[in-house]
Amino acid sequence: MNLSNLQPAEGSTHNQNKRLGRGEGSGKGGTSARGHKGAKSRSGYSKKIGFEGGQMPLQRRVPKFGFTNINRKEYEGVNLDTLQLLVDNGVITDSVSMTDFVANRLATKNEIVKILGRGELKAKLKVTAHKFTATAKAAIEAAGGEAVSL
Image (cartoon, rainbow, N blue to C red; front, side):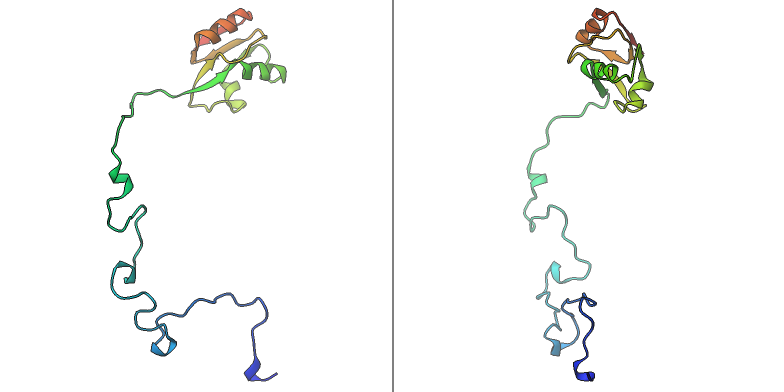
């Protein structure tokens, strides 16, 4: 072992990048492997997302259409089969309201809940929600329950 054969321990070094801009003798001086002129040769260059080399980008070529209704109400749907599953699991017994929906992660406290008619409801439940579909309301009342709108 002498100064001519010293080496760092195996796995201790990571940086194997080209050292750019360290003089002509290194072979990576001058333009520092960036070529001549153009945006990519400048410091601070970053290509915009969707940039197509100056060609009109896709998001500007494609026409806009439709509109978004700012007064639209988004309902969180809960189906009858979901309610029946909660009854079967013993989570709810005779009535179900917003607190139950929030507790069982079927909706958050700020959402508007609408009861939908998929599946069948065998249990007699007093269901309290913001909205009901006609089929859901009929099914709840046919099972001997009550549909209460908030």
